[in-house]
Length: 525
Picture 1: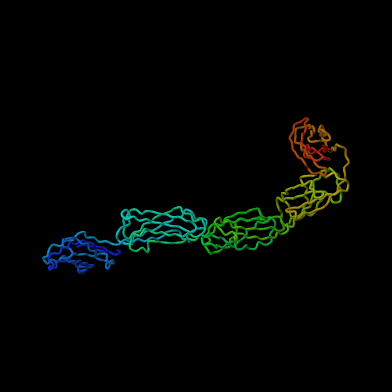
Picture 2: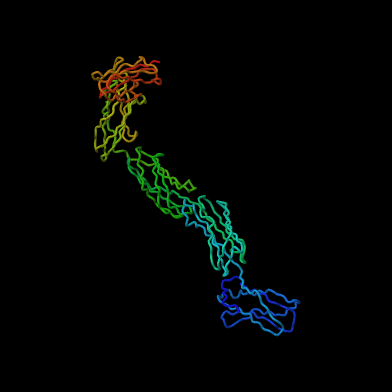
């Protein structure tokens, strides 16, 4: 008798044993009844085996297999061998065993699209779950089983693993085939995992799955910017839509104003596939000085393969500035200045808005579109209303024929808002030495050689240690060379290479302790 046998969840269970037959005493019905009970007191005969068998002229063994499939829902059965003797001979049974078919299933355990984040697709785990769907353990060391995982589509790879150890009945085991898989390549990944066939139900020995990687952020629209003021901070709002199939949680955004002045920001938002959101940037751009400007907003999701929906462009308008040049007082448009006169420009500024700080003002002088002087000052504070401003820098009036004119242009912020007028010149007749304000014992000599050729030497003397400023200017007043030197008391000389200068008349000057000496120089090579 075999007690307490659990047949629940077994597959095709059988009772196997060997029985000894012979061919003697054919009239004697010696036999064995195989009986089974699921309640412990009532037994059913499921097979009867007679000792006598005409096929065994010589006594021998025969294997018997009794199907127990009707009892696979039973957790405890008793199997009994009831021997009935009729006096014909001994009956023998050997090698009694309960067997069951093996049944395993394969399940792919890989990332799901809804759990993946765009651009964070590396270091992922590929795992296969093997289940023993029967009661009996499987010893892989006795029954070799090979697990194979094939990948096709975006990537072509194959993994193989020979299973080892024992998988207990109704148990599972996880096989990690790759712990560092990279889904960064866009496309479809097809997975097929299977085991070598060791069981009677091969239908579940193979598992398949597919994953599509297709991130895409769509920059749908830009909220109206409207007309803004110069130097105003603007925080644009854009509509972002996730038209891919993966969640996006970090979206780099770049703003370009007139093709430059880049502003960058990362939008830390979690945007599921198919959703959209209106996002206002936390980092502003500054409205430029021009009346209009080109605005470009770009999403720069590094793993987004679709680039034709990542950019928005618009042309935006700027309010006219509140601060403008209203008039140029000096140089005058009606009173001519003598050539070689030093002038500190003076302008009138009109501010129709609030007081402002660090206002940059530009002024330039030109003859026939040739700019010979250009000055830039920064005004620390400009009040509302009208202000007269004196430049801290100066220029030299070109020594041109009397009643010659040159252009004076001044602006704040942008040349678009330039105030222009003309100034006139009175020719200053001089000898070679044009000497203005001088100090005792401060001298500036004539260039050597004279006329100058490819190089020259200019001697000078200063009565005290200090800074001197040396300039070479064209006849129109354009500064061609400029140098500040700290010198000791006494005699000195300046050496300078003028090989690149064209033949003609030039001026050179030296400033010392707030005064200047100017001399005429002829270059003749």
